[in-house]
Image: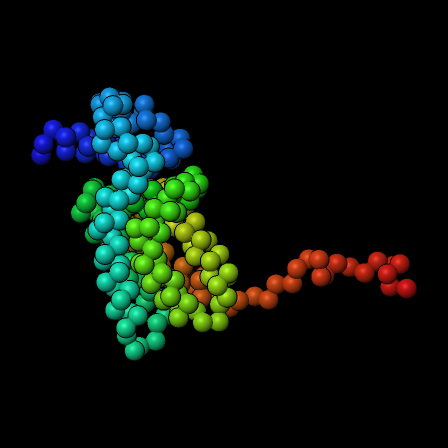
Length: 228
């Protein structure tokens, strides 16, 4: 590994650790350079800006994850068998677990970083995801619509984001949850076990019947004067 590659790797490792722990907004470039033991000029040279550094940290996982998902989504889209939420969500399991081969605890770290991209309101990441992987996201949306044909697009939008919130909470509290499971239920669970327990819950939540919601403005009680 060259000196440039070594420096770049140190910056990425430090940024990844801090972003996952304290968030994108809560992490400064000074903290990153201090942990990586490099100067600010090195960050500017290799990445240009904090936004580009954030994208590079995610990209180290996305370049492995997204092609795998695209391949699996393509198989489902061309299959003549009915598509279910269970089938769509099961596609994520192995590609996500393979992220552990990129970096120790890579699966958990990536999911934490993905959650940070929403909770920290990083608008540039929406553009980045759409530019780099919009076709894969379109495949996912199409599969979800096929699996839930009676669910309006707006409801599907909310349910997918509620699901992401569940994933973010689970990954953020993963260590505490696994400790509780072992202490209270004698279950020793790794990250794969957590994911496999999470998927049935998400599947049921996404595919739940669509409630008919009446706006409050249409259900206001009739006053005495109005009833006369």
